[in-house]
Length: 275
Image (tube, rainbow, N blue to C red):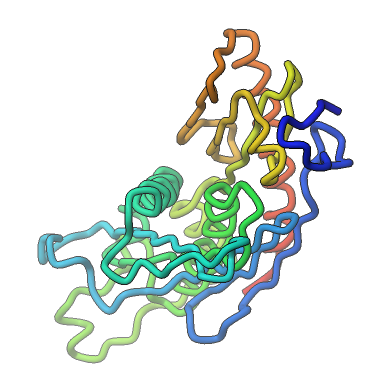
């Protein structure tokens, strides 16, 4: 274990060991899908909500949907009270929620989703490092569960089965998909799961899933977002008054890939058979 520059006690986890993860589905009943996600001491409440209509800037005859995300640190989530951003999201908050939204849109097929708008709200209940990465992973779970329910309720259908506006006005009932058809369409909409993890370089050694202490002592820290088929959505890497080599970059990406594979296994086990 590297010596921590801040003097804090370092984690007793192995360098490639993830923090303990706990997930509670449908934590709040009002959202179409909600997830209370805990990764170590970082806790995220992710709620997916279906909007009554597409954004106003969409064309009237749009056949594709939209996914938006918002992110917020709650006042009690940090060691000193975080002031509410009452006049709109500020720089860091905007940057993170754009990242979350980009990541989700990178994994979903908006044409297969159809003319549906979904907002995923990620509220940080407690922050102990990696909040943006935990938010992305939690948001993916909430989004998949919301899509699964939209399909089950006949609101998200393959293009050739969708009702026209006139049919909807006339009260025509949407077709119901069989369990096999529903599973097939879910994979068409959201073919791959999405997860994110932070990795860092401390005294030349690569660490996976940085908590606050590790993050604050990292010479290099990196946030990596990937789909479950091994494709990158986004990589954010920064040397903190430090530089790093191509070999070190490759080592960081290898550690992130291994960590995200574990996250994807956890997501799949959590959602298996859930309606």
